[in-house]
Image (cartoon, rainbow, N blue to C red; front, side, top):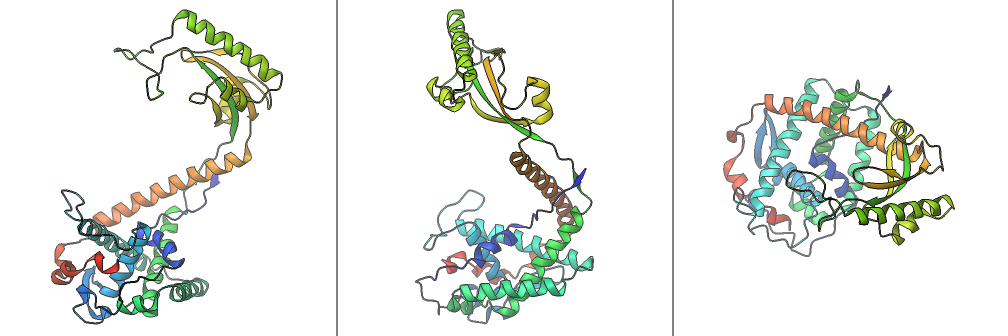
Length: 343
């Protein structure tokens, strides 16, 4: 058993932060116009909502909003008043609902991290300062001023993000994922069954395969035996797949090393005989019984999936246990808030 690497499953706000760090193009729209929700005040002085007694002001909300737009790749000039769905009449309504959930969840995780006594080390704080410097250097200064995004609020936000990541690491520290070895093989499949227009095996009313005629099946078997002789003679499998028009059913495949050994009992470079199944006539050529590159990729993916699922389950427990009500939101400010101000 090998301890899995940690792949952070931070909420969407945190994930899209990286996109913002890469810099954003300046808008051609005038930046001096006050934001609708600010009422002409400094965004850092306009309370928007509270989560567990922790107050979130408009400048922090603005950062989260910009992050969401960036993560969703919403282009400049998008009309946020256009219809979205029955539940959310406009795109603005849908984005605001998503933003509210993300802000609340992010803050709940931050408060949980505080409860667990999580802090950032000096090295982590230094790294955070570097990220803030990158953001400030790459982002439009006038827009930052309009939305109240300064070093102080960025420090608060990045500190929260860092603490959330460390909180997630505590969830996954004891998780172990059993790795497997995977191999690669090439196959050619000459069908015995009919296909529908989508290329799927055609089934009758009882769910059974609809077969080709006996004569057609015999022709397919003859082609498979011909192809086998050519593979054994050293011809390229991919070229034969194209020539026999088998791209819909054949190609490079992967499986665990153990299953390949059990099923085919072949070594690297060896070719099977023509194998008949209910589906058709198959030829297999082993590329690598142990494909290190593919094995590493799959094991990392599997480890990431297990870890992310564990984090998701634990965070859902924290979210469900945390009291959140509509009264926590400053109604007139939130009603005036619109994503159109950012586009």
